Image (cartoon, rainbow, N blue to C red):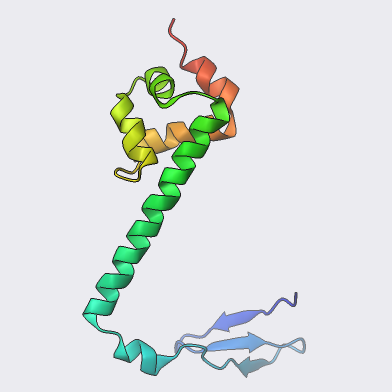
Length: 122
């Protein structure tokens, strides 16, 4: 793979930096006619598709984290101090884990033994 060094000039033009220190214009790879032809309905459709994909990805990740620790949905929810419906909703893509819940899932994913040990009742 070849590394390309580029510079964004003050006028908005992107140039490629050559080995001798000079610059060469980089052709735009954007299809401006296609971009200009994009309608608001197209944008709304693309956003909906992106949201659906994000929900699928988040659901798969939540499921992966739970499977990693080998707990059922009910046991996982109890360990986290959450209603079982919350875990089910995450795994079905009905809801996305946000804020502290996402951070906790990330901790469980990276260091499951430590995270679950910290969640043990006193």
